[in-house]
Length: 131
Image (cartoon, rainbow, N blue to C red; front, side, top):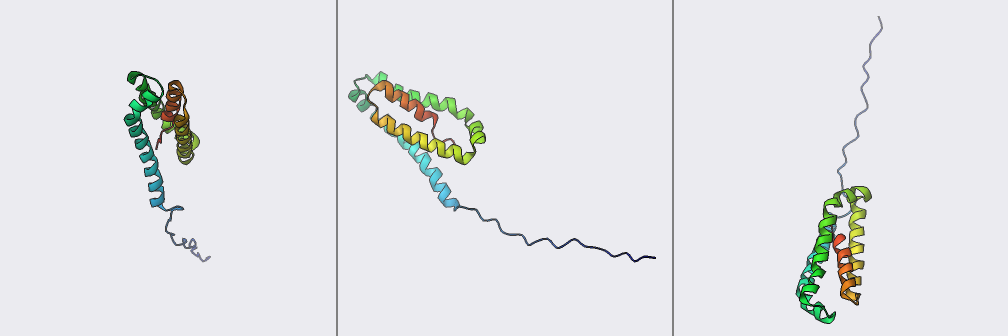
């Protein structure tokens, strides 16, 4: 009769503790800073509406389109932001939003007319930080 020898699988390697590549506090600060920029931008536009109207030769009713265009474009893009994040990747989409928001903010500051300001605000509202 042949002897049966038991073979045991090799021992599993010791579990290594998972460590993130980047400091989570740094990531939290970056995300919070982007959200702060968004709130600050909206607050500044609300406070500056009379000055915007006066400097661009528009009425107060016309200048409210600066806020309306921002909010409408934000409302359009917000529902599809999850799909866009899955398409581009969350990190890339977040960085794209920050870059386009910043560029459109600069364009808003340089807008020579109310029509261009409204258009740039619409672009800016579409790329608000969508986490």
